[in-house]
Length: 314
Image (cartoon, rainbow, N blue to C red; front, side):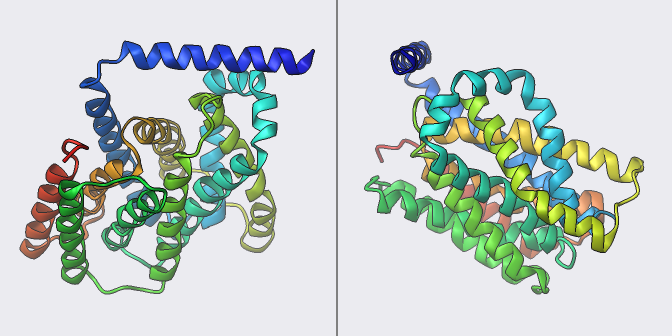
């Protein structure tokens, strides 16, 4: 009886998904996907600045843990009930959910926060620029044809990112942490293409946030015992609210939907805008320098994004 009920629920979910896709014009789907990828990229750029700004006041693990607690509270009204309805689907795909939670929630942002202790925000964004290449390689390995225009845009944007790294500050000890974080995010983005259709967006997000926060609990306990709790203040709570609400709930919803609409490789080309956004935000908010060489590299990245994010058939 439970199997029949679960099958009925899955059929209903697929029917709603088909109706939703049919309601979106073919030309609007890619445009919406690219717009959502750009929104997520811009919002996430602020989280690099936040990681750097809190490097000496909030320990990295505590930063990550409270970020996901806030995100859970924000997503719960939309995702908790959906996750409960889909509990059998989640149970059947427990391995996928656990891996997505580990890569995208537990590890990625914790490593970013650790990198922020010693690495300027702009440099963090430059290292993160490697992730679109890894996303594209992941899609190509899965048999997805990228197209000449996509590859050309990817290479141009990649060249701009590499030149931007050369024009920026030298790598500090946090470069290794940031490199591992980049690999985690790229793997998470590639994994999203395999997300079962029965898993609704809000329910899936709530579940990964919950599982990721639970996986962080042991490290949170160690951090509290060794480093002590951070002091709540306007300068610590407000940035944590930003990363919990905007960089977690809003950005992850937008990014996951963008992947569903245009794929990881195409969204990854837009993601090349991140080092540009991070450099400008770190210059405006943290006073980190941005010279003419960096500005020219940013223009090259933007040009590559415009070229590579075009028609998938090219």
